[in-house]
Length: 253
Image (cartoon, rainbow, N blue to C red):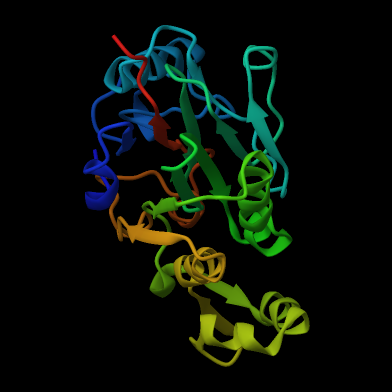
């Protein structure tokens, strides 16, 4: 389990970037696989999510996950929708006693807390969602609730630049958006480039005047700690697990 040093100091919230360690899953999903969309045994995933609920100190059924689709959609979790299927790639809430969760396996998990308005949030920021504006949309959603904010964010474990190989078409797409995106790429060989997803996402937050902390770990490189989509593809495995990151405002006793 990994934590933001800065967010850890804020007593009003509880958060965690869970590793794959602990948990009930076996085989290629060994450990704490929280991917309901994986082909893992449903009973094991359920046990793993129950473990997360206990660690986050929320009641059963109060861990809220999204059906993630690499979109830029943001949903505010309220009493009238938390039991429904949430199709989004970012969620925010003002409700205490609810843990928000994001599952990843190389993509960037981002957790947020607005100290002035007591709003927590989490973002699933793969390259596509970040490219389409999921970070900007999440900040806008928070600012719609109140324009007077003090937002802190932490970027969790994700794939590192040295392991994120992309082709020329991927590079051209980013360059077509703005030539400034060149700073996120370096050459690997004549046909491939390396993409710095963490830096790309970090700069999106910095430009929005968000105070950013990092849990700078490489999901591809650290097999014992994290699941990785790209590593699973390289090993020709049929599927892959997902790690979970979560944040909540505990209920007042």
